[in-house]
Image (cartoon, rainbow, N blue to C red; front, side):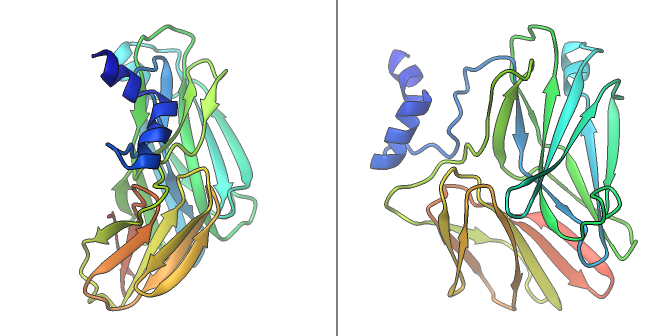
Amino acid sequence: MFLNKLLRKKIFKYFRNFIGYRPAHFLLDYEKKNISVSDAFFWRTDKSFKTFFKFTDILNLYFNDDSSEVEIFFYSKNAKLIKKLNIKNIELINQIQIDSFFLNGLEDYGTFFIYHKSKKNVGNSIRNSCYTGYSFQDNLPSFVHGNTLTSFQSFDGQTSQELIGGKSFFTKQKYYVQNNYKFPKTEILLMNPCNKKIKVEISGSIHYLDKGCSKLIEIFKNEIIAIKSKSYLLRPIVFNYKGVYLDVHHG
């Protein structure tokens, strides 16, 4: 039991990843209490896109904390903070519309993170992996739930850590995407969850992603897509197009 606790500490997770022994996909101490863990969510306002984010008041629903709040941080595709949203008096179910007007005329793509806040000692940790919907040319949105846990913040906002994705030091990892590539057009959206720059290989093409940065890549009619990098979980969001219709899912 002591050895298991030791191996789950952050410093030992770095060491495990370095030698390739029981590698950790996430550099997170799962024994931490009173923290809010956030997935990396993608927003899109480019090419006539609108993004809808639906989230639940997790602290109220599961821990009867009716005074909880949320903070949402929005980043550009180059990992620059572009907006911060503080929402008090949240409902049990909430929705935010992210369009170019919301982002002061910006038509692009990027990421955002949500943290729940509380003054209570909940004695537990929570993860927000709620739903993001993408509307193309004002059609009904296609929803997908959270992708990969990437950062956390304490309930009181005093401590935080971003980019907790695990990274291999030697061996390239392969992530195979299940998808029907017979659609007229397919895009994948990637975000580097590691705290170091990574090299990404996709079907012979090479891409470089700085820490926290995201990239939209068009995929042609390959039967199998293999994403190679040193990230232990470089999980994409997939956008399939058929005319004005859209189907979005994660890998």
